[in-house]
Image 1: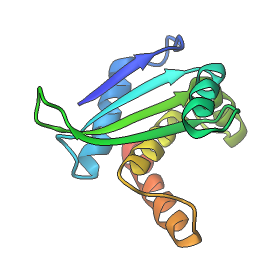
Image 2 (image 1 turned 30 degrees about the vertical axis):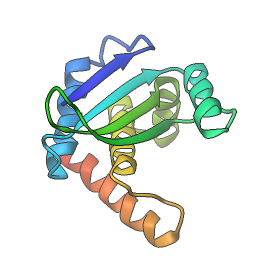
Image 3 (image 1 turned 90 degrees about the vertical axis):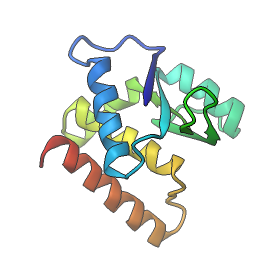
Length: 144
């Protein structure tokens, strides 16, 4: 199950239900159907505060992931953790990369989910594996 928290007002063209559906598709693709994730959509200021408080980095970023891997006592499902996304960064990065806001948003959600599952990009081989899987997830989502 995917929970979405909006701390930033999304444009009308972005539907929270679509975000939940596409995010669940990512979990399904990764054979993590029963896992739970919370996605927080925030702005640059909000993500900067979280980044400073929990990671010691006083700057905004596009996505943060906080792994939990606890069992939800109500559902018995594995709670993977939280993904925080700056929608302002989503918008600016989509322009920079010349693709849609939706593609950038789902790229960052896929990136965050992969971090929750233990993937990293600190070493070249880890980077290759993680970004290959991230690209595969986004291609599957957008049908290309």
